[in-house]
Length: 178
Image (cartoon, rainbow, N blue to C red; front, side, top):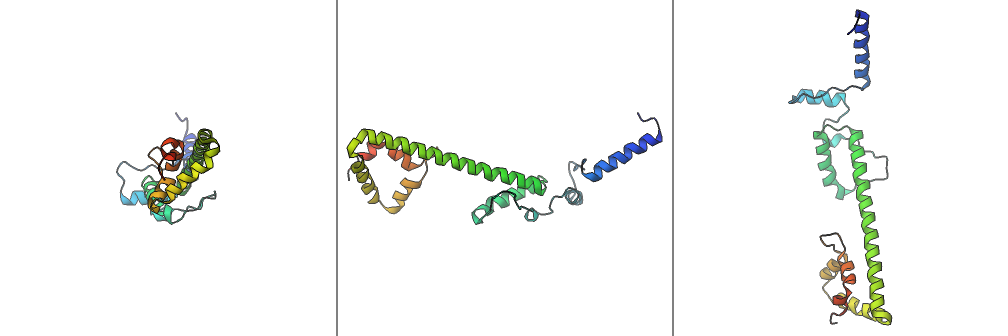
């Protein structure tokens, strides 16, 4: 409870300063009008259209044409959620760093599987390893290009490369007739 008009004035002035500094922000009503949304976005530094976001990222992330559909969809979602440019940038930076981290993990898993498969094949074939691998590679080379590419570069539902599965299940592959 304020004891004087001066106390009330100080409280009002303090609230005005907090509002103008951005410490307190206006919230949208449950069903805002177009004008209220426009004003809210203007006050809070939110672009009026999704394509108006400033996405000059601080990191080395660059967008190319392949990113455009996902980026456009994200910006529509960010805009609908009334994210400002800094929030949108932070979300995008996290997303692309996470994708990069997952890709790096996948490369490491693939490498480990390939190394384990090679070790197993070398143990099974001993001095015949190169000859057996040559037979498998020659067999694959005789396959149609699309099949060969699919086997060597495709991925299974669990994310493993098909070629790592071929190498790790060497018994069936290495004994294929040439």
